[in-house]
Length: 232
Length: 256
Image (cartoon, rainbow over all chains, first blue to last red; front, top):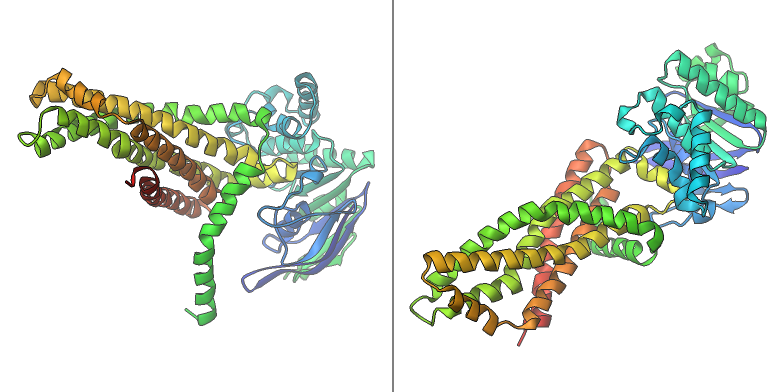
């Protein structure tokens, strides 16, 4: 479970998050809705511990996330999978090496075990045939699929998705949506999705929030007109 | 600028050296995991050491030629000819090889490291490492700083050999100093301290070059413009620190 307590963040005079509180339960998918630039990614990065809030605390299964330039969150290694909007794959590594990296660097698995788990993760997202390619040879949709495989390979209890369905062609969009639903149905993970895609939110969410003026507002089954009106 | 903002800017400038050194300590002290770092260290040594060899050899040739001509111009007719060999040997070992090789590696490697890490910061690859629980200081910075620290002294030795050999050839062919006389000057006045001082300097230069590239690359803000600024800053800081450390080491090693 992730618990966000009284988190605030501003960039110069622009208050992005203003005393945000959130509980993300295990086995459920929490969707945070809002248009681009509203601060969804900022909240997600604070939850992941890669961006420091001005105020507030974040806990993963009761363990406090440390912030700051030299913060040490090694005890959270393998606890978190994060699918970045742009993929954030390492240019100098192949698809397989990208996926295997977290296992190589944070576990003591043998090479054979790492290879097997990497192949399994790539098979799961339908990218096993592209294991030897470099990220520059992938389309945006394929990059997103590899990023999902990388997030899944260590089997983390928490998955964070930043706009997972945005900018994808319909086929890959559907594949990603089905995959996230399957992960939810396995019922173990806490999943957080930030998106401006209302349709995806309806398909995937167990609980939905809208981010407005730095505050989170509960918005389960929000209608399209109400969503659009909220930000007009 | 408002007074409060001006004060904040002053404090930042004053704290910058502390931040720079803290970064270096964080990379070197807390990051050791040789089993995982070793392969990446070898990769980086290949990029920043072996990769620099052609330009280092080329510049060393010119260092040797110019030093021989100028030493000859200063000394010929005033002192015996073997002093040309002595002058070339000692000035190359003590000063020219470490400092000029340091400048070339700073221009080549500090900029490359800052640009690479800066691009990784901008494209969230460093964030991705942190999220995975992979220490980015160990994964990215330590191999680069180690490679520069160990690679630069090796390159300096190459510079010294090529420059002195080139100076010997031009002295014998064009300056009227026989090869045996030149060699006598180089070897007779050779002092181990000159060589070790140059190598120690080179190792320190390498560490600072690697750290400057990593420091500015890690702290990139903004997009491509930020990467450009980081690249420039890394080279400029490396050059300034090379001259600063050169003076400090001169005081320690060569102050009689």
